[in-house]
Image (cartoon, rainbow over all chains, first blue to last red; front, top):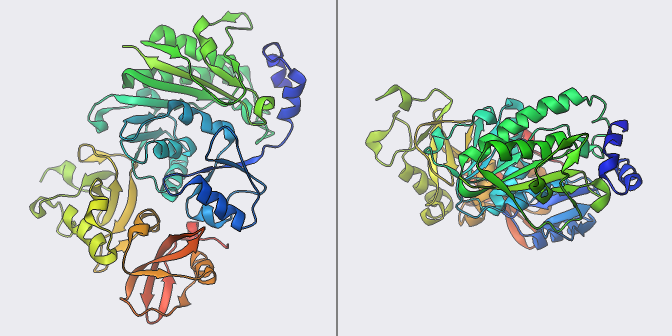
Length: 301
Length: 170
């Protein structure tokens, strides 16, 4: 937990932040609207005696009083266990049915399957990962949830090829990058045990490469959502700052009905473009969730 | 026939509309696949009309709710829906869970106890006076009739075809 002390200058109520990080996380499921509706899923859960509390900001999210996997609605692919903040980036990207969408770091598929549901399972959704084991998990989640518009590719997202997809640009991309995962500490209490600044700085290089490739593959006027489950500005605002300077894109405002604070423009002697304030930081004490970072970019060239 | 049209186990090839374009003698055409869902389960051609159908490896058919140029070398393209090797084509669990609510025949509705045994992977004696072969098993949940998966009906017995990884004790 000492690792998190470096963020004390960024966080208003640091004691509340630390206390939230030490609490376990509620069990949350997202209703899969490819197969059912929230009211039907809720009725099926309650019929099995499972306590259901809707998350106020999103109609298809329920907090359960048990683990999500062993019940009839889960068997039918009506539900997917997904942390509340993990639902944010696909909600922000909000693709339309029939769009062409790239999910750059897709496995194990929580956000991919949510994107498909938002697309009404219509239009091309390309889901990329570079690890076969994780791709296996992605495919099995997609099939259980009834997703039929996803194409799965194994490649390094930094070198993603449009060639199999008729060489046409995407309307939108989701870049939920691999990160140091500091914000998942409530789910994985040992996640910070192997934390090093070298790892943070190394993975930031990968994040910059993936976000740059996403901006390159999206048409002018299309959107790219960048997200991490970490607090480190090196992996968040610094990545945005780099890509704003290297590619034709700008940050845009977006609505988020969860408590949050703006992106930070300075950290440990580094300063970032003023527009990174349009990004949003969600701390665990804000909404009793994991920690998260999310930004929305518009492609301008 | 060019090399890139042959199966190497990694490449998805779109099913032909013209039987003369088949890349192996038992490759189904798009029409044969659409007709099969209609004839076996009464799932109409209109419902599946927006899908493209692909083969990866011999006899494994995938349904994709989008399209691209064929062949394409990727890890997955939509959903694996049908196995067409042998005399009796077999739908996948995932396909009947996705499309089975549209089925009008060869559907066997199970009680809660029968459904529990079915998803646990058990074979069971169930009365049925329809066709033998692959059936869609359903049960009632939250006011809906929801498909559970594929059962093979033979000699008075419904044999659960739920893959091991999808079986549950509920």
